[in-house]
Length: 503
Ligand SMILES: Cc1ncc(COP(=O)(O)O)c(C=O)c1O
Image (tube, rainbow, N blue to C red; front, top):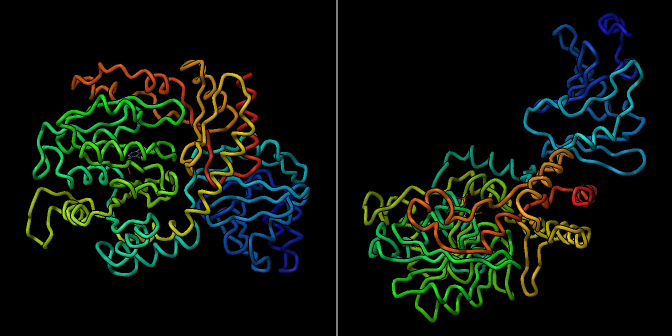
């Protein structure tokens, strides 16, 4: 074993690489901006050129310039490795293939990857890396341009109610093809404001506690909660198995003289049948609210999500477009847009003149700056999701015991989630999820309980409705990773794992 302290005493700049090559690396891990190469009792930090720390004293290796030189040491199987902006470790292997290892904050990499460990010179155990590596369900794409835009917003001196929010609104309205986009700080806020701006519910000026809002029972709870928040009554209807979305035939039976709105959810990134829905709403003089939280960029027969009724988008951290937390209301109706702007800001059209009960639902400038950059990349990212989903559908189509999701004609699905059904039900789905977890593949159930069966809604006496499709789907659905950060190899691994577990 080399005595590193002695060697450092003797070395000259020209010796740097030779010295490093002679070291016995036994671990590599990641701590914030640093790659750390463990050398039994020592480690090397690679940030602005390798630094070897011995007994707490750092020694620089300026000649090596960047950590890339250090990586050249790992020459047996890894040809080249870099840390990219999104804090992923990219390894290009000597056989021409590559892998990408996403890194979690400051989680010590050593928990997941150990290299070598013996007196032998390092040989990267790629199989071990692959087997301990986690394939995440979601991974926000934050690159240099997002970081720069947010930094500029932060240093601009104006953190709220400034030009970046206005610019993001204009860009988003143009993208969706509507007259107005009103930025808010969550998708839930967008839904709440949409109902209030239509004068629906006892909390709204002009609304009544008898106002009824029809919602699908199979969705995220916010879809329904907003009606309670507005002080309206909820009427739950069932969904369809083939697209997980609201059963437009069931709506006719649910409409009463008190119905004021239908909330159509575009679940998992595929639009619900807004053609049928808007015809029903128009015929009955009721508002159509599109819960497009999961569907930014999707279309139906050429019409964009959020351009048909009042569109409510979420930019939560896992969404196809993210601002961390955030949302947007889109509309072609001047009066609805103006009222929404008032409602998101304390009910004030003019500063310090409270016209009606409002909230603080405003988006911040850094969030809007992030949103503008994300919007520019959205179509390309959605295309990657579509390619991933198409490949998964090919690989999983004939696997027994599971049903793959449909990509219906005329709909441009943006695959916020890729959701299979494990048709044998809850127990088999649990086993599938556990098997995937063991193989380092994340999955999730969206959603394990239909909304009307949630404790809140049971307590309110709404739990009795018989909605068999919503119930069955909540027993069967399982979402697999489909995000744009996945490699082709990841997709193959996910499909291979599902096949193996389903066998
Ligand atoms: C279908 C649906 N509706 C509403 C929301 C609420 O959005 P947010 O989390 O931004 O409040 C979400 C978010 O996950 C959602 O998926």
